Amino acid sequence: MSELQWTDAAAVDDVPADDVIAVLVGGNEVALYSVEGNVYATDNICTHGHARLCEGFLEGHEIECPLHQGKFDVRSGKPTCAPVTEAIRSYPVKIEGGRVFLSLG
Amino acid sequence: MDDTASAVFPQKIHWESHGTSRIPFMAYTEADLHRQELERFFYRNHWSYVGLEAEIPAVGDFKRTVVGERSVIMVRDAEDSISVVENVCAHRGMQFCRERHGNRKEGGFTCPYHQWNYTLAGDLQGVPFRRGVKQDGKVNGGMPADFKPAEHGLNKLKVARRGGVVFAAFDPEVESLEDFMGPEILGYFDRLFNGRKLTILGYNRQRIPGNWKLMQENIKDPYHPGLLHTWFVTFGLWRADNKSELKMDRHHRHAAMISTRGASGKADQVTQVSSFKESMQLNDPRFLDIVPEPWWGGPTAVMMTLFPSVILQQQVNSVSTRHIQPSGPGAFDFVWTHFGFEDDTEEMTQRRLRQANLFGPAGFVSADDGEVIELSQKGFEQKPFHRTLAELGGREVGDTDHMVTETLIRGMYEYWRKVMEA
Image 1 (cartoon, rainbow over the protein chains, first blue to last red):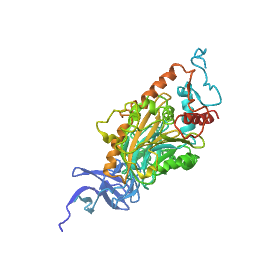
Image 2: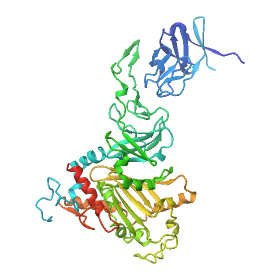
Image 3: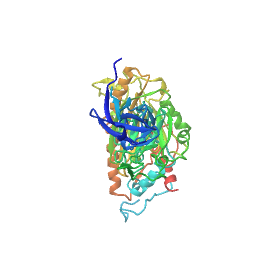
Image 4: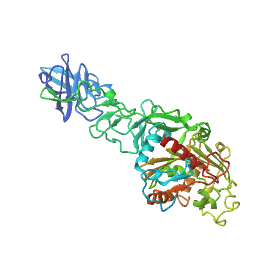
């Protein structure tokens, strides 16, 4: 198995505690979440109504879309509340030297 | 009534007697009576036809249609059941659905104006910026904290299904569909919709510039087909001396005209009937390639009127529903759904499709009822103090074993007066 390719996405300090921001990585918007000191990453555009999850509301491990209140688990990208039914893509994260690295696969 | 009556435009509708053999023209032209009809016949106490289950076979499939003049959506919801919801957004009242047919399995219904989002069954599930918009670390606006999506769903209608046919009612207190039809009419309904799955063959749609009741009356009037529809006489499809029966429900609002064609079989239809043009032949005899089907149980034509919204037609091998969709007192849309049955052979499907050419505005029916309805309406509008005459077969109301009567029209207006004058 080949090694994961890691891409520098942001400084750890850029991601406010228990909140969400969006960053541009390789031309795509990625949402970065900080939950209980851990950082998670998913695509930023909701699979339902084309809204930005970084403008939504993070509650525990769930991000609520600002448009139609659909929810995803930020750890897996799985939908947890209607109207979203389709998972959102999530990315492996590693923290090194105060930076957040993503594996974009 | 005398044609020299002092008022051409009376203030109020006037019936000449307690009977219904003379129907005031104003029953067809007045906007306030029309609204009262919508209220009392379409929105209260009555079931209205909305469609066939076969039109929406898969989860998320929907069809936009109407109950009376209110736009509704018939949809196969996530539970694989059929919901009917009113096509009016809970937010700003938009008729949000514009397509006639479609599928909304992914995401449900969304109003384009502010993207309020509903489940297929009509529950509100998402309101944009319900919790406000984040800006510079603060949240602006949003709905009040006590806003409850559960209180702002789409208006859900009561739904009844039987034999693959879907009816809806705004009135939650409406009686059962079976009681609404009554046992006699239900028997003819079940004859046609006997549990076999239906297949959709196609649609006709026409706007008829006449009052919606005239279409009900047209199919309660066995006097006209042999006289107006000369083609039917020439080729033996409808004759006043056919063996026939007229039956009503106990309220006299619904009816069935049951007719049995004198001569059946391929070779007979042009040779053994006396007709206006006996020597006339079809270039393509397949249009009358009639094959009797076991479910007929005798009659070759049963025309049912379910008051107020639909006509269910069997004319030999052609079967269809015809939905009456009022649009003010002076017009209605008439939507025909031609169908078949899942166990039809390909040959039978082709036969039903060919025979569908007999009916409708471009059919062989010659002339189409829409044309005479338009001219009736014009007559009503020019002298609203006058009345029609429906006295063939007498002035009373009752079932008959012949066609030479306007009893069904009198019956419908007996019911109309009972409800409208209550």
